[in-house]
Image 1 (cartoon, rainbow, N blue to C red):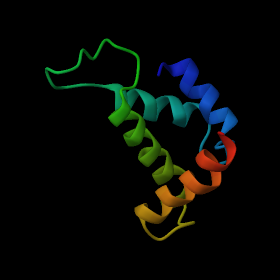
Image 2 (tube, rainbow, N blue to C red):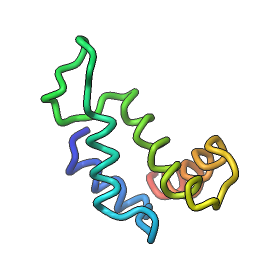
Image 3 (cartoon, rainbow, N blue to C red):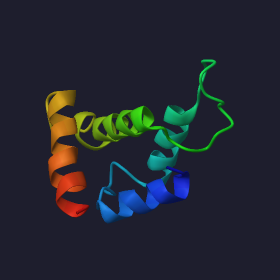
Length: 90
């Protein structure tokens, strides 16, 4: 999934808020996509399946855990998945 498709997914999921803006989404996409191992070329600007999961966890951290909306990261991930990803992307 490329950056444009991922941004479209974020819009459809209604994830933007005062804690999570477009710049934060871009930063987390790039941080997740940056590769330091030999199995993936870091010049690729697309997420692999495992990276998609990683960026969802990173966004849950920014949106729910850091502002102390949820006490733990696992609850933040559950909240982002149930309230934004699953319910809004049939």
